[in-house]
Length: 202
Image 1 (cartoon, rainbow, N blue to C red):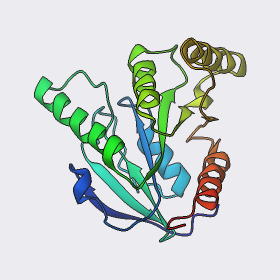
Image 2: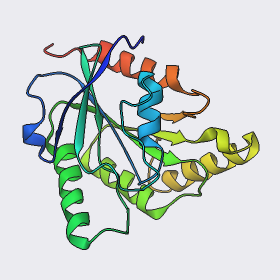
Image 3: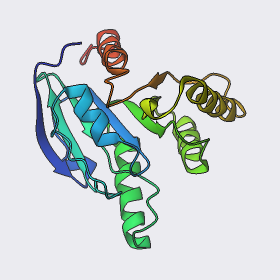
């Protein structure tokens, strides 16, 4: 897939106020500071499309970006950031879960995982919930340039084994580096493939 245009459309806290068009939506989510904004900017080749911040928990809204005037890339709030009040965490949980469960246009959810860490309970539990809810998702390991090949393979294998304790098969897995632009073609080709196999309105 070639990205010809990528434009910010709208921000919301309520999935019912998201764009009304019946277009594919590919959403990105992960723990705070997983490198989500950097990945989105790398995929679209626009350095400032999604706002990056050294401060975790920056994304508090559902952000829609129209890609090639054809489909939406959706930047969801991060989960698991402890330095917020319980009321704000509950509000974010409601925003995230309502979008994931009730947004009919959601075609696939990309769950971002920092490859530098061993399996985190918050990530595995979130993916377990997605599976139980029947939400189609893929795993995107970020920051691959921060590790050597052996350590990268070891960490990813540990995640696979942790998931296979309760899963029969694994979802699609992508390995990315925003710095090196690694994984860009693979992720975009996967989006292209899904849209070709599931055209809207057919």
